[in-house]
Image 1 (cartoon, rainbow, N blue to C red):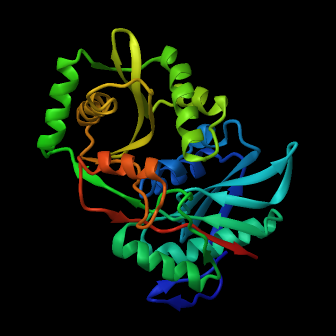
Image 2: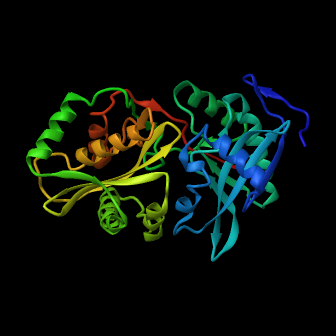
Image 3: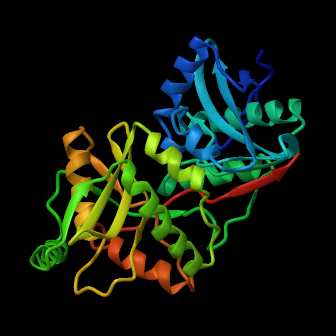
Length: 326
């Protein structure tokens, strides 16, 4: 039941109706799915299993409505200890708003919903780019959130390229080099999940980052809107990438390579296979899944960024991670 509204930067900040539950009814599911098409795949109901896999969190789904229309949604992951909810939660790459003008209202509804569940500390990262990212951050600050972005946070910059464009000449050269060396790429299957987990664990340790639990990789294997791509030579897996399709955007979610010394990029053949897969499924853009912020001292992340910039060179700024205590 909406209350009197206010405005900030031309944005509405009223208190709209919302539904906040562990499971949504059929009508709310339809509204949720429609709204989350405006945001990141990480806010979809389909991704919820992966987002929660092996983590001490409880998923809750928010649908925000104004005049019977859905204007926002959020997959809220409430922390728990031994299954008992605690008063802290995170919305990864969300909340989603139908438009930037609706973001203020969605944040107000999210605050009310969290307080009703005893959540008093909330971390968010709405998925907006460039000028809209800056505008979204103004709204977050006005709503009492503080930027908590660090070099190790979820990425706040990315690169994208059009799938209508040809591959970069340097990348084509890299692919020819890999082919001459006997490397081949293929779409992965369930048997590739365990090798991917091992390679990814080694990568996270090298970067000093938390490792993904086994349940996360198992959930990836069940995720229907994505696929695994493998580069191998003589039966040995050299590189693996996982890509998700959301609307017309394909997004690189995770990848890892072996330590085997070779004279070519171990990731390039798998990425080329992923690009062909995305094109065949009607995607028009490919997101490389993030690059480091300026000044990031980690050499491994910088090497990954150099590879990604062989596909697209212009960085895209995303909304940074923000947090608020209620």
